[in-house]
Image (cartoon, rainbow, N blue to C red; front, side, top):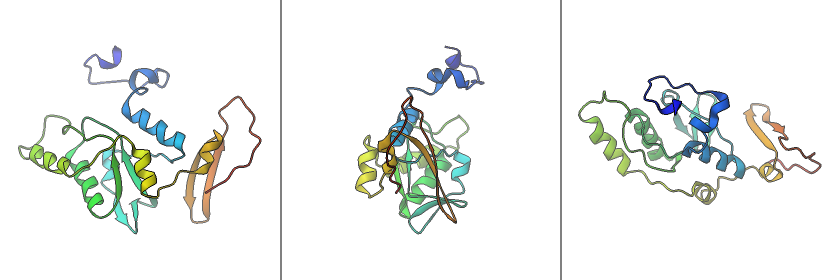
Length: 178
């Protein structure tokens, strides 16, 4: 396929999602979480550098999260894995759906792979992240059971909801916000 031809440049075309996104563990994980009523956000490795653990939350600037779910991936930079394991040791709730196999690229230092393998040994992964979240008391939004799509944001004034009906059916019901 044109997306797997060995080229260094891979165009992520919005109208070809099935070629580069749909079917991948990341896509499956995001949809599973959203369908169950959990909010989903996305972070780059660079953004992870700023993460810290405070008062039961993983904090990025002004945004805070009760947990992180790391979908099954093949490669993870050593710096990112180090940061995630540090946060986890501090008490952060971080769930791995699969353990990364290696560091990306070929520019690692000789002892990077040894460090990577050591960190990976401390990780626990599981395919049933939803059960793990519920077991830890991290509850989904009840709004998800309506079939409506939504995004929430916490502001100093309170919680803000953006709700959209992407179905062909009118919605005539009560919405419980939690």
